[in-house]
Length: 528
Image 1 (cartoon, rainbow, N blue to C red):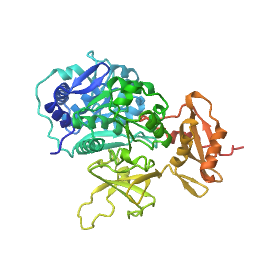
Image 2: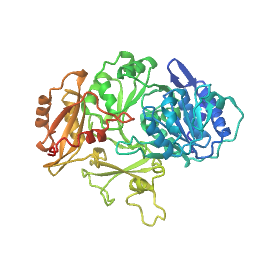
Image 3: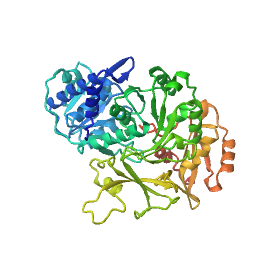
């Protein structure tokens, strides 16, 4: 039976209505309560005029209302668009206009900065605020309060959605330009939830801590994965890394997902016994976890299973490495997740030999529907499955990731680098990941990123931008000597730049593009 996204909660509320679905601070929401609130809001949205497949943007921190909004929009037949609260008004306006959003759900405290921009949102007609007192803004929008939408319990027929309909548009971070909206169907999101829950062995007794933004597919999947098995989710917007560890201990969290920059910070902190005993597994995606960070986490969490994963918004999740394989091949990104096929191919689509670097191509039910309103970029990334039988009248679409990987004789995959991040220096192609691993392994730095900066003689020179441990100085000369000892000459960074705070995109990843742009003139001779 194919489920729609909101039916994950409906099913859990029927099976275990009193089980806790959500924790927020000292409050809880059972599956029955969550399902009722979703029904009420879906009814309110339909009464307010929401049409099938219209986009509704949600600009809220992690709280009960944000989760209710996502699933109510889906139930009403609309398409939800999570907005990262860290975005600036101009970025929010771009997304609202790009996806032709009709309704924006937000809180009143966002309006002083946002209101002047909303007049430029040509398709927006309604503003839903969490507060009961409706806002007085000169925007020409219809303003509604959250409780007013919830107050009418009249059962209205929901839109007749099927699993191939749009459910959400998730915008990529935009580190290489304006954000692109990845369109996900109900089928994409439900298939992904079942696949991840299968290999993580999730069950109703699990409690997941949601620390990543819901605008990030990896962050949102903490909800869908938990709801697919009737587990509970703790909602948290953390200020400091040690707050995450405190929450793991306080709520007896069993599953924690994070990206490498956060793991780098968490690996340096003490983990109390309560956190060690409750945490059944941790997951990493959004970039390779440095081996030193992984070793530090394994030492700090001896009873916790680490799952190293690889994914992209266009296909949700693609591969994972089981914990039992980490000791044998810690640098591997594993094999395909359940119900997905991953291939490594040459530019002409032919399969690569074992050990040969090629592009990762993902096929299956998790492949997204393309980029919203961008046929050109969609055609670049979403292409026919390589090696299909030419007798097949209609081609299946796969995601050509742009990521360079290689596969060993046993079928395990290894990340080499992004096509657009590979450094070309002195005639060599260098993966920044290889350089970064040595920097992390030194134990002398907190974070590191290796960049290719234009150089008049080398083509590109390798520059390492590093942040110190605990605000201490970095022994750059010692770091350089380690690189000289462990890397070939052409891979040793030409420059080491110490920067206490590395810039990040809204998903928490280090913003490589911004750093590259800032350092673009580093090796250029000054003009006279």
